[in-house]
Image 1 (cartoon, rainbow, N blue to C red):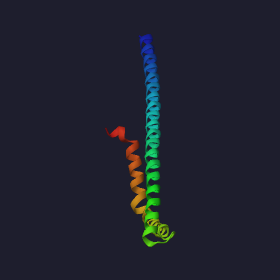
Image 2: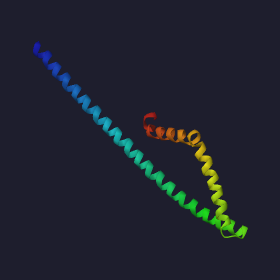
Image 3: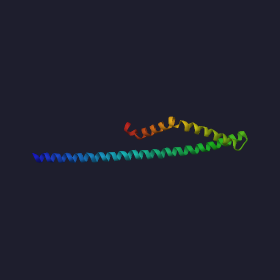
Length: 118
């Protein structure tokens, strides 16, 4: 009788060890999955940002030259664009906490925990 209780206790200890090992493996695989998802997302978003930036830059050069032609002055088109972007920069700087940072943080958190919601 005592031997059966000891055997059951050893089986229980073995099952607890297996459970903890499985739980740790699951946690490790979940972290790897989230890490890979995050890196893939960063790379794909990085490529989108890179190509958007290049097209935006070229469009701004074209607009700068166009405005220079309109005002018949070599530097005036680019100066107007610089003032425009400086104004946008100031607006973003003074409203970034309220309008951007919280939305960006919430978006990143939603993206990281997307799999758990589904």
